[in-house]
Length: 120
Image (cartoon, rainbow, N blue to C red; front, side, top):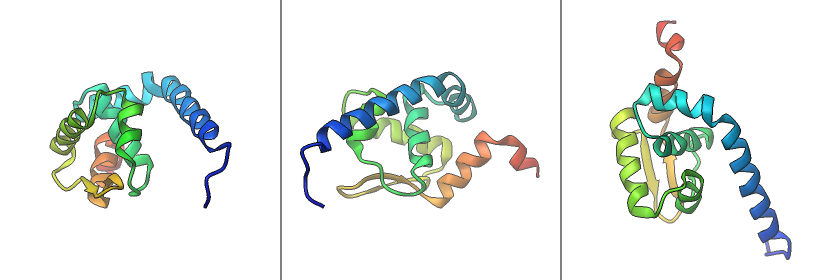
């Protein structure tokens, strides 16, 4: 696909809408993830984004922007914390593509955030 004149404007609009939707759900969904995994809000946002991506890589820049963190160093630290909660194999990095959640990580996330699924 070629670059069109509206691409930057559309990307900006999508990012703004994602922030608005994220803000609306932050009090409920993100806090529940924070409690279930015992992680910070930024880590919960990153884990949620990776889970929603369904195993597809999420660009580091997008994770940094959405979690409102400073840089890649902070991102790597938060990924380590998420791996401590979900398992070392839960989140992987694909060179130049970003981070993705493995099937093992998705299962651990579901188990941690949906306690009724564990009992079933």
